[in-house]
Image 1 (cartoon, helix red, strand yellow):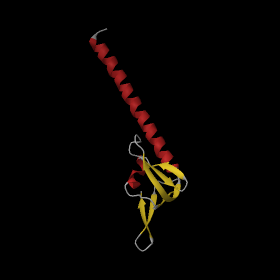
Image 2 (tube, rainbow, N blue to C red):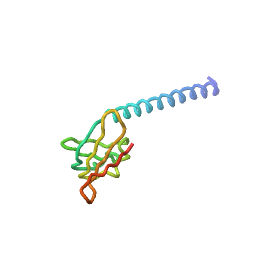
Image 3 (cartoon, helix red, strand yellow):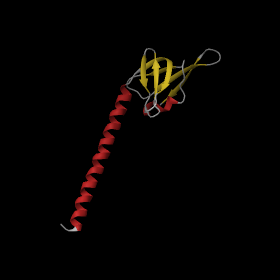
Image 4 (cartoon, one colour):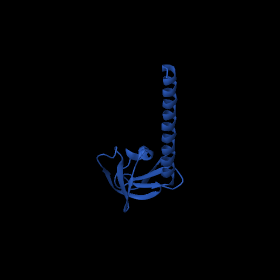
Length: 112
């Protein structure tokens, strides 16, 4: 085989690997986005834990259940705190966080 033919074969293999890599990434991203939209939680935040090795994603206890707040919940990650009320309905990307103000009235903050 001459070097031109080897370079052509290498280029074709590299291009195919590149395409497969991006199709796989798109599929996983779409799957994660669909899972987030279907996710549902509501209630008072009782605890927030950060576990080493979990890429900074917090574990949030809402009522008796634990949820991992991944990249899709990144918009509320730095805002939420224990005793906030949080609502995420299935079928939407919107997250609502309610926090009592100094008068004891719940203030709503919407994250889209």
